[in-house]
Length: 345
Image (cartoon, rainbow, N blue to C red; front, side, top):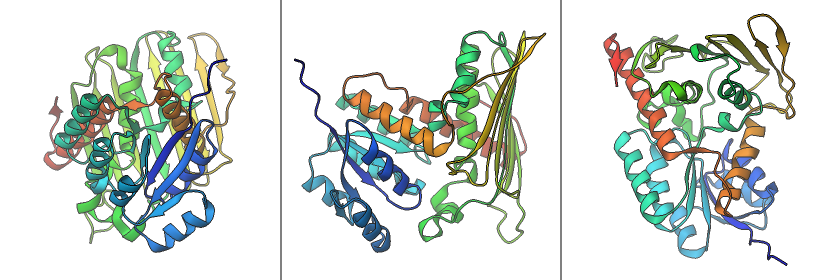
C-alpha cells in the first residue's frame, strides 16, 4: 500500500482580519497542518492562540523560522512587508503563498522569483479569483471558444471604503504603495488571464480621483483601459465611494458574450448572490455553477491547490511571474494617472 504523504506544515505570518481567515482555512484543509503563527499584535496573537491552540505562536517570524520545521509559509502582511518576509521564508527553504500585491517594487518581485527558482520552491501569489467557480468558469468558457476571440472586457467594482488594516496601514500611502495595488490589481490579473491567447498587454491609460481633498493620494475612484496585441482591450473601473460589494465582468468576442455578476453585503460574505450568462449570438443561457463563489471560498481553493502542489500535484494558483505582471500593470497605471498619458510596455 502506498504511504500517505505527510501533512504540509504551514507557518502563517500575519493573523489580522484577513490572516485569521487564512488560519481557519489552513487548519481545515486536508493534507495541511497549521503548525505555527507569527503575529506582531499582542491582541491578534492572543486571539490566534485561542482559536488555534495546537499552533505555536510567535511575535516575530524570524524566531518562528529558527524554532520550527516548516514546509510552507503563508504571508498575509501589509504590502511594504511582503518582500522581507517572503525572502526570509524562501531562504529558510519554505514554499511561499504570498498575498497580493506580490511586492510594491518590480526589482523585489524579480529577486523573489529568482530565489524561488534557484531553490526549487513554489512561489504562489494570492490572486484567488483564478480559483473562483464564477470568474474561473468565465476563463474556462473563453478557452473553450464560447465567445470566439475576446475583443472587449469590462471589469467593474462598486464597493464600500477599504478597511483601515492593523495600525491603519492601508491608509498610509508609504506602506500601501498606491490603492491600485490594493484591489484593482485583481482585475488587472483577470483581464490579462482572459486575454492570454492575445498576448501580453501593450499599453495602459488610467484616470483616478479622490473624495477627500486632504488626502489626494488616496484615490477612491479609478478607471483604466488596457490594450492587447489583437486589437482587444479591457476596461477596469472601481469606486470605493459606494456601498456593499458588487462586481461584474462583461466579455464580448468575435462570436458571443459573457456576463458574470457577484454581490454581497461585504466582500467576505459567506452568503453572496451571483450569476453567469452566456449569449452565443442567438440564444441566451444562464450557466449553472456547482460551487458557491466568493473571496472566502476562493481562499479555500487556493490553500488546497498550494497544498496539493507541495505534495506533488499541479499548482493552479497565480505564479510569481503572474504576480509580477500584475504589479507592473498597477505601476504603469499609476504612472498614467500621474502623467495623464498612455503608458506603453
